[in-house]
Amino acid sequence: MELIIAGSPRKGMYSDRLAEAYAGITGGEIVYARSVSVGPCHGCGWCKGKGNGVCVQKDDMPRILEKARKADRIALFSPIYWWQMTAQEKLIVDRLYPLSEADWNGKVLTVVMNGAAEDDDREFSLLHDQFREMADYIKAELRFLGVGTSDDEAFGNALAKVRDLAASK
Image (cartoon, rainbow, N blue to C red; front, side, top):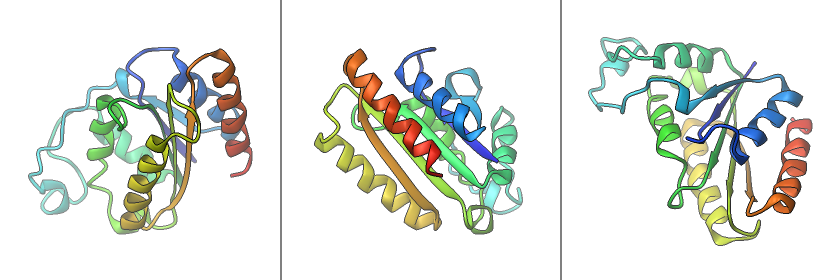
């Protein structure tokens, strides 16, 4: 099973369309970050202690965590906002903290970031390095794709790359 988290705050935009094309090939389930109620991590450590992997907060995150635990692949799709994923997606990523080392063991982390830049723009290499560190920390295999979506032509190229990525799983 694959869990796909789509981080765009705007419905139907490039990131959504890329995630939906990817899901169409992989059969993954999409969670739209803008459509769930997830608060920020409080850093209380409850989930790692008394909570036994469950967050103390009462919101939509337990459902997402359960899907993440069952998934052998987790994919993040987000437009780039200030050299980072969107705030909506970051809330979910931060709240994946209750996942244990055993939960992450053997998972593949796919990250697709898109923005109004050329595919070889420095922002994509910076993001790749950041997600490489994250994947190394959680001992997950990283598959990263940074694509420009500045106009319809660039989006078409990005879509082809995402389809290739999905087909190569």
